[in-house]
View 1 (cartoon, rainbow, N blue to C red):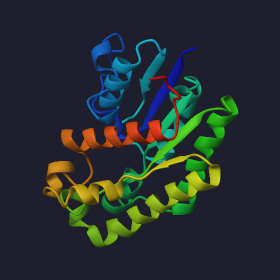
View 2 (view 1 turned 180 degrees about the horizontal axis):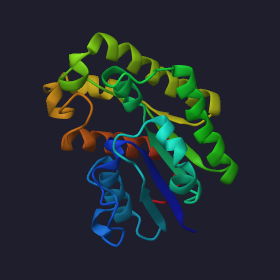
View 3 (view 1 turned 180 degrees about the vertical axis):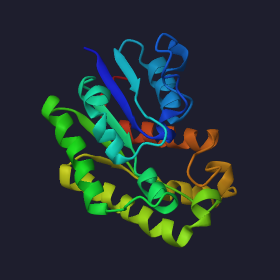
Length: 219
């Protein structure tokens, strides 16, 4: 029986995948952390019937995900759903003057989970913690940016607890990594990971999935 793993989110998940060329199977997963995950799981479990789909879109907010949720999630009917989103809700409020209402964002985010569970009550959902560092874009407006990002991070954790879904923390991992090398080595602009940063997200994701038996793969 096949299992569909869907990656959802913004540019960090998007990884510059070729959306206009669906026939080009070399470039549908992008070049971010999903690519590492897909390559490793696919190679190690060729008989498991795993199907991988990436629907991350650069620049997306929580509301953007909600607006396209039917086509890019519900119609796919994933068995495992991974969501990493929230940093653009902060970015647009700081740099574009968009309203920042954490309660509204939270209710919209919760509705994503409710809607997918209506389609597949057995779906396993992983909510990834948004992360950042005080360099480049965030660093320019850090006193405004950081408190809002902290609210989003706490929101994601609270939703995971309330909805009884998995929560994958990432901020502390990057904080620890930035003690080993300068922040730009891992997150080049304070928001987007480098190749090394994506690799570390993938490794943490794979360990987390294995420890929690989310895919229940043999071997």
